Length: 485
Ligand code: AMP
Ligand code: MG
Image (tube, rainbow, N blue to C red):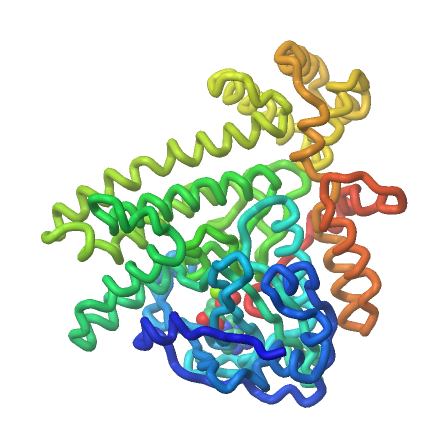
């Protein structure tokens, strides 16, 4: 088969790209292939497993008309502005038009140094690439917008981190790789080059690909800001509802499409606590679970700043328009969060005020008793069916919880509806670590079994009991995640 790779981004926005090639992979070996995703994209899984397929998945054999590029972007990392980041170890191979008519970026991570690599080696290790594969599949199965992993191919190279590790390339699919950081880079380049229409072309490209309705608005660029804010408000509310902690919400890791991107130090919270942080470098808790909505807004403010020249003729008027738009974010987020929580509690018909009060009181108790976020909601469905003991058993202040339970029961919760939105199986940290350690040693069995569990997260299945349980307390208390590995 021949695969058609478009170069729309590289063609329309060449200033934001550097044509580049992947490094050779001396001994490519397919570790995992996402067959459902391949089929969705119109790619033949058997072809992908063959030599040409592996060549594509490592970037070492690409169609003649393809023009792989490293993308340029800037970004605020932990609040500090870096004017020149870009794909240091990644390449955009091009765009695939799926049978659905939509464009999907085919992108590689770990394919060698690029001009944006700074001190990095341009490579990636098997463990972290499989981590992205597993967690992004879990997010997809949970119904949360995300970039997806098409395959992980071991390269046969050794990657040196704290110890020597097997190297790998991840093939990633996204509706695009436009980020807030892409918009932050464009004004810098315009100032440096006098190329004044770049920002407008970038915004038009983003509108056409992700938010086409904005094109018909009276003020299309303001409509773009509004659409991205709304998409991020919904996305972060969904993260919060499953206990997902992104871990590195820098502006270069926030998409314009509203998909979750960059599964570096992310992890799922177990015991409910808004201050939960797993990332080893996030010592101030900037990206803690409970801070994610306000960080999303902070990032959107950086997006708005980059868009200012398009929002009005003079800066002051632009700022006024941007502030009014950003002022909507909190309300959008809260509405999305309340809606998600109403569904988790099986009371989708209740009024927002009732749900907000119920959720507020519940969170206080969950935190006080350190209950597992995921397990709690499944057990609560049991209480809706008449068996309250498993969920009651863990509360420190039982009288208060019983009072809450009564208020909730009075709303007539729907247990089956709860089980359709509250997962049993999430990629719990101890399970992910166990699976990645095995895979690094050559045994992919645990990764496959974990994938099997998290791909149908809502359906209890025999033989998967340990996948539904929190990790040992000692493990969770000291668990840390790492960036850029
Ligand atoms: P991240 O926090 O993973 O989004 O990465 C931030 C920046 O560091 C991006 O510009 C990456 O391309 C770059 N980067 C991360 N790891 C490496 C590496 N091993 N080699 C080169 N660049 C890297
Ligand atoms: Mg990144």
